[in-house]
Image (cartoon, rainbow, N blue to C red; front, side):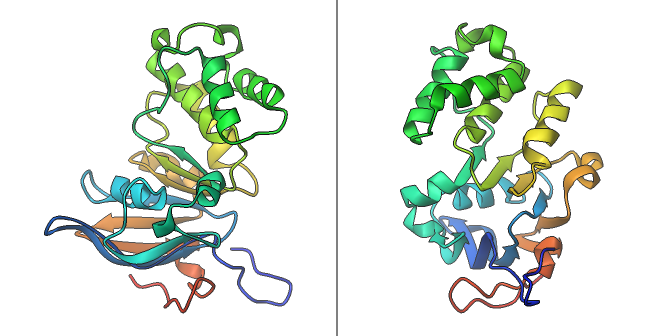
Length: 240
């Protein structure tokens, strides 16, 4: 956990207060309050159906919260602003790629969407780093599941986001792909990471804290529990 020179805790990069999500009368999770410091790497754990993907959907503005509020930096999630979306890189269950476009075309499209400076150079850098340069002009539809995931990683990184919100990022990756995931995302210096994973044997390699989803509650430990929720409105302390 990082601390400012005065000894005060830094403002959280990700924070939630009394956050909840229901579908109809069915709660997925309730009363989630936690904070994640800038640069922290947090594993989001729990059984299938425990609410991990739903929490990430709320934080990425793909689903509206039913109660409470969350913040990414100074941006309230409920407002779903373009400034917030530029702050985050998202890796979801679906790669969110255009199958009819080539890897190069996909990346250039998203680079333009985010107004990435020197976009061609940035796209080439990522395609080379992820082992996709030789296949940059092929239709994305012909790529294997593992190469789809590599391209999705490149898409999530193209605008150099400060926060990465990842849903089962190891899916489809071989050993070389996992090494790239660790280097470029999970262990990237200065980037705040919240990643849902069922690969618990890998968590110790990269995470410095956890949020655990179970029975509609989200419990924080490690770096996620050590950072006070105090910088985004009058928030309360972490509850587990």
